[in-house]
Image 1: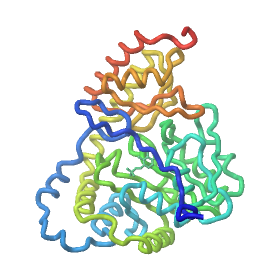
Image 2: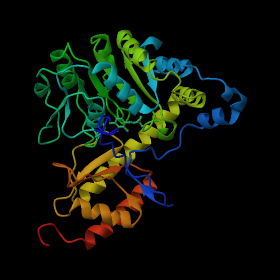
Image 3: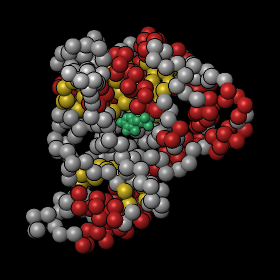
Length: 358
Ligand SMILES: *Cc1c(COP(=O)(O)O)cnc(C)c1O
């Protein structure tokens, strides 16, 4: 026995690299290449710093109300947290409390198994089909809850509302969470299904489509009952998680719908262009409805491309994991960044040895 025998041990999540060197092209963590709306800057400039001696509003009302207005739901249906990582973590703690395993895809956001481990929640991963799709028939086994992103990460594959509704229909006794971190890049949100399913929780973030990864804002929308349960757990851990500057600037960002639609549209256009250029270079990828593309090349090794890009200070994401080790996840940057990326990529493919010819 030692003081170390009763530790809550866990292998932590590994976030994508945030390089410390300058002039890199950063296409590795799905950040938005555009700054947040200028209205956020105005809020920051006009903030009266004397107010910082006070505790913030525990309910983050300005932000919750702005979100409720935008998504046409009641304020009592909105829960906000410090990034959707915070929201999902709270949701795991609140809703996944069964002896039966929770279910999520084998290829998905690599934080889910970490939260399950740290909270000692049993889980079972469900293999995606060969073409990286979710088969709702796989989600009919006894379970303690379900979570998946839509579009999925890191594949970028979008599932239809019909597919998701099939999962909901088969699971009236489980909480079903849909992580919509990338829904604003052309997908259809599952939010309209909230009227029919009290056990559905929809989670979104300001980190991608609203250009505010550094501010740490995430939110969940669900039935009033679910949000109440979530708040009960949150207020049993830490009431004052979101600082007032974040609350105010988040609310401003939501109110500037025009800027939001304009920047997400630009990213979608750049993405469609990137699809054509990747295809021209011989890459294949599942059709991406996110701000990233998950691409593989039949002739060249993904890890070698990854390393060669990194030597040119271009960062993409690569995982040494079963089924996806030959894929690169490329975040959509500005058109200029994508030009540099493709110029480098073309050059690299000309120098690498083809797979199987080594
Ligand atoms: C980025 C991401 C999140 C977390 O984002 P936050 O920055 O914590 O809001 C959650 N789920 C998926 C699938 C993501 O890609």
